[in-house]
Structures are given as structure tokens and as C-alpha cells.
Image (cartoon, rainbow, N blue to C red; front, top):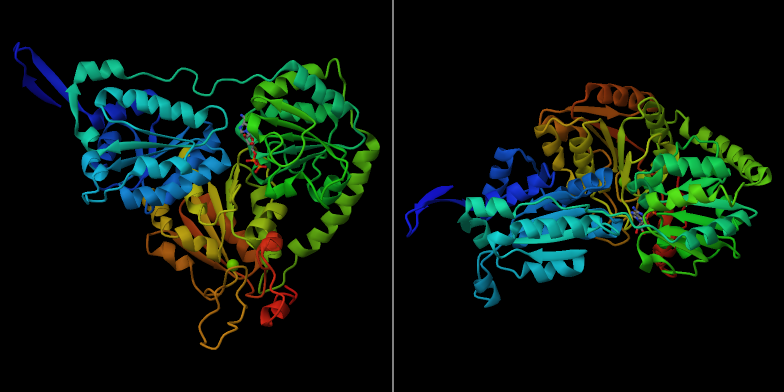
Length: 582
Ligand code: ADP
Ligand code: MG
């Protein structure tokens, strides 16, 4: 703020772009920001902190983006992260795109260099045409050039991130803008809060009636819940619909907990049979993408018909015919579905439930033997069986989960009891999102977080262990160390004697990392130790790290999605890949 005297000698109080930006964010309830500072955004972060925006300084921009994205998923409002120009911006783009794929609202604000120098390619410090580079990776991208338009730019970013199918928005703030001045009173007059940033989108009653009639005609109806259903925050309505109709449900991984996994109508333990047998499937906020084999093929009943509830009209028919599309937001849609049941009653048959129950019992018994085994060295099943015992008693814990086998097996073994308490690799199946999500979840909710990583996945963002300690977050990091990508026993099939491309250090004491930053490390070699250490760590509400020693032979290549790998037909790998896994 500076005072100058203008020609008419009335003193005018000036403000600058950084202060206006902070005021515009605060006016819209944005009181947290994740990021890594440097030229030209350092003082923007410091001014924000001074005015009441909690700034979580992180170690890599992609992690900051993941933390902000987790906040977006958990709250339904955009999380915000800040990066420096070119390299910081490029690091941050990865998580901007991932958030967009996941349909989570997030805003990446990046400082950028002098426009006229960049446009003439004169070679500025970190000079890059960031706005245009961001466009294909974002739902929307804007540059603000004038201090008078900062509030408008923030408003556009918030609306684009949170309306319709949410996604990632890029906001380019040139150094010149951040330093630009204008009259403070005039600047204040530009600031406003966005009106209704994610407006309800009500589907047509005809589409709901059609869907209900199809559901009522089904012999074996099934409901799939996706992370869009979790995001919509209408858990009670979804539960009421499922219980009133008696239809079995299957949650996608981040929809676990909308209804508890222990709910009698959960078909989780009979997933294969449910998909192969269902004749009408109602998709609530879940896409028929690679994760569901595009709704076709041997996993599905060849005569299945689909109802799909989605906010994005272009999602319908994305991979196959949808018989009954319901385009609207899930909250408004579920309200109409509940109303519609009064005139079009739907009741799933007892035979269908019985068929699934028999299969469930068989599978649960098979699973229990593996998860309760005391064998050492541990494998994913008995290590995660011990985790399950602890988390069953701590339903408030937020669970972050990434890896290949660590992801697949944890998703199946560990039940969720509450909605929006599980964050994982998401739509793209990305590694290296975990600690960012853990930080975002802890900062957003203040609740304990348990972040379970494969040893490879942990490597991408492991330095955020320091951030967790610096901010004293109640996060317990667990690394399931089986010594490699997929597992640690793949040989080098060449002659140079180097570790194989998949091999990492199966004897690494990862828990020592957190001790360097003042946290508490544990080394667990038995299921009993996992249970004891995790119980202690959660109760402490302090940064903790449990290195879980697995057998280096435990795990299968690519977890449950090995089918996505091309298979060599000749040479040593053709034989190697057939080796049974433990
Ligand atoms: P999952 O991976 O859990 O199957 P997806 O991310 O594939 O879930 O699908 C989520 C879907 O939910 C997306 O197509 C998205 O457009 C939709 N969606 C997100 N939020 C809402 C909402 N509030 N109302 C309706 N649909 C939504
Ligand atoms: Mg591993």
C-alpha cells in the first residue's frame, strides 16, 4: 500500500495485484492454498498467509496439486495450489490433468514471465507461453492481465472448476499483474463472491420415469456407485433408494462407504457373479471406462441394459448404448427417483439376493483364510488383514491407497464405513498421488489419515514426508515393501548384473526417513506388529511411518490389470511371466 498525491491533490491509497488476488480468494471462502513458492509468487503466498489463507508449503508442485484435488473431492469446492513459472508450472500440470480426469475441482495458479518478452521469444527467465501449454491439460484456462480483472478471473476459475463435471482450471498470473497497482477503494469494489458456483442441474422427469420402468422390469437389477456419487454428497438419498428397492449395489473404489461395505445389500464379495448376471444396471456417477471393461465383454451379461446418471451429457454412450440416460446432478436426480418410486414401485427379488449371498459366503471364507494367516515374511493379504482389524475400529480415519498389488488387495480387504473416506489412484490409475492426497485430507478434515503405499508408488512423492512432519499432520504413512515394482524377485535377463527394471531395495528401512524429520518410525515384520504399531500411530495423531516388510516374492505383475500389458511370445520373458506368484 502506498499513498500518492494526484494532480487534483486528493491523496489516493494504492494496492497491488497480489493483495487484490488474496482478497478475491478470501471473499470466495478460499482459505487454504498448497504450493511451492519462488519467483514471481513468493510474496503472493506470504501476503495470503498474513491475511488468513493457510499456506501449505510443499516439496513438489504435483503433490501440491494432488493435495488441492483431494480437498476438492472431499468438500465439493475447488482446492487451490500455487506454482512458480515454467518448471514449477509444468510439474503442476500433471496433477491438474489428473484432477480433470477424476472430475475434481481444483485451481492451479502459476506465476508467469513478461508477456512481451515471451511473445517475442527473446529468452526471458523461465519464459514460456504457459496459458497455451495449459489448455489441453485443463478443463479451462485463463490469464489475467489487468488488476481490475483479478476478481473476475478468480470468479471464472471457481465457476469453471466447480460447475457441471468438475475439473482442473489454470489461472495464469504474470509477474507484471502481481506487481501492478490500482486505487485501493476501486480495487475493493471489484471483489465479489461467486453466486451459486455449482448450480443444480435437474434431469427431465421423463428420463427418470423411463429409467424406473426399466428397473422395475428387471429380473436381476444392480446399482453401481462411482466417485461421482460420492462427490454429489447425497449419501442419505442414495442409501434410501437402495434400501427401499432392495437392489444389490457395487461401489467403485472411491464410492466405498457411501453405504458401508458391510451393508447386507453390498455385492462386493460377489462382484464377478453380480456383473455377469445383472440384466439392468443403474450407474450412479460411474463411467463405463476401462475400469468396467467399457460395459461389454466376458465380465458382463451379454444382454445387460444400462441406466446412467451423469451430469455430463457427452458421457452417455461413451463406449456402448445406454438405454436410459438420466442427465443431471445426482442429488437432484436421486430426489426424482425417490419421488418416482411412489408411482413406479421397484423391488428386487429375494432369489437374486439369495444367489449373490451364497457366492458372497463362499468368497468371504476363502478370503478370510488368506487375510488372517500369520505367515512371515508377510504378503499383501495378511499385512492388510492386520490393517483392516485396526481400521474397523477407527472408521473416522481417511484412507489413502496407491500401488499395484497394494492398491488392489487393500481395496478388497479393507472395508470403508463412511462416505468420501477413501482416496486412491483414480481414473488413470496413477502412482505418486498418495502423499499429496494424504496431506490434502489431513489439512481439510483435521482427522487422522492412513496412507498405504507400495514401495514403488511411495518413491514418487516420498519427500512430502518432510511436509507432513513440518505441519505436524496426523498422517501415518505405511510402505508395503516387497522390493520392487510389482515385486522384488524379477531377474535381469541381460548380462550386466544391474538390478532389473522392476527391482527396488527390499531391505530398505524406509521408516528411517521420517526420523530425519522428527516423526516416529516403526518396522513391522509380523501381522501382530502391524496391528500394534498402526493402533499406536493413529492414536498418537502425530506423523508416523510404518515400514511393512513383505516377502519379495509377494505380488503379481501389474496387480489386477496385468491384461493391459502386451505379452511377449518368444524369449525368456514368455516363460518368466508364467511363473506363479505367491
Ligand atoms: P468411478 O471411477 O468411481 O467409476 P468415474 O470418475 O468414472 O467414477 O465417474 C464419475 C462420474 O460422475 C463422471 O462421469 C462425472 O461426470 C459424474 N459426476 C460427478 N459429479 C456429479 C454430480 N454431482 N452429479 C452427477 N454426476 C456427477
Ligand atoms: Mg512393490
